[in-house]
Length: 506
Image: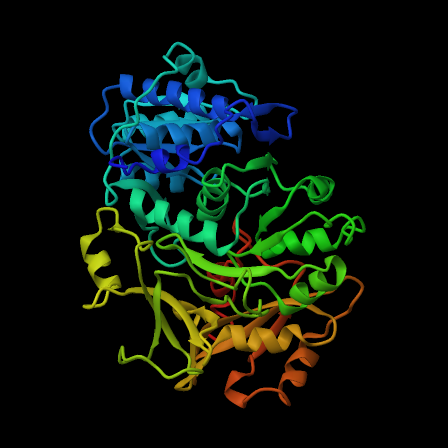
């Protein structure tokens, strides 16, 4: 196949009968493979009719819909660069992303058109369309007049297919450039590694502005010619209702916790399920075990990032799915754990995780110095994650290097302390953050939430840790709160907690 355009790779896997249902949406509509093919062709023709420059960015901030997925496929087909933006972003954030990416086209919801179009036009964008979750908006109206015949624009493996802005917990968000080859290769590897088979049906309940929902889930179903049961937003009752008709589910840990709170989650409900996958944030060992007991299924945890798509995974078959780990490096991925001197560490020692492989991104958009800084001379990407590798190759993530707390010259890894706090009676969840301290430079502050019906005493939490951890790891203070702040993917926003408690010891 000469054309390495990711759309061509996905399209080649569509079933021979295009009239079969490809997507069963929660609004009662069914979309056939023919619909995906023809609608994405019409949207691709619309984009090409605008005479956009080569490599033009198409920035999209819309609610989740099948039409939004078709717009993504159309952008690939037409050879442009897809730029998904979180629907929670406000005006200041959008001004930065649009100013930085300089998209040729911006697509937003009708209700946000007023302020988004103003930002876009000021940044030099010529085309702003609307797309709503009820299939209305100027984008579909215009595309309706375009031909449903479209020849996929040729692309090489290194050509950029998408730019994903990283969460940006420190400093400005960076645009990770992912190529057609990065995404196609990762989709192929996961298809084999996770044992995708004929007849598989995916419940798609994730947002589609992120690696997990947009690439891992959608590519997984499309490259296997598998039907998707499409939920515009996660609803635990709705997911449980869909389980008997499905075989694969992907979620972030928060979704699994919410499913476990439903009495309808039983072994019987999961009888046809083949695989439950978790990622995007750490899964508590308690959730892992409770899921096993309730459903008879073992959640498969994996690890990836915006810059690399998926890097590691617990085995689907032929090995143990080990709670608290993210499994083994995927085929084709080279992963190493290094010390502060950059030298590889022996098994069991904690250090920085570095990776290399065909899935690793092309660099940061318009940040050549930052890109150069993040790669080693021998071509490994410094993930910024801290972890260790067991003798048998299983990887355990301990935290982000920027979350590392250096207290009185000693390294404190928050994930280790959080693991101990989470085992304490009555604790639902915890987050440990470093704040400035006049004597120690930095100290840990624990922020915890209680299990329903439990009363937690902050002083007692700290006292209980004294017999369990080295003194330098003990948080100097603890706060009991109703909920930890999270981003749209369920990750705890430690930057907000650091900010909240930074003057505690000033």
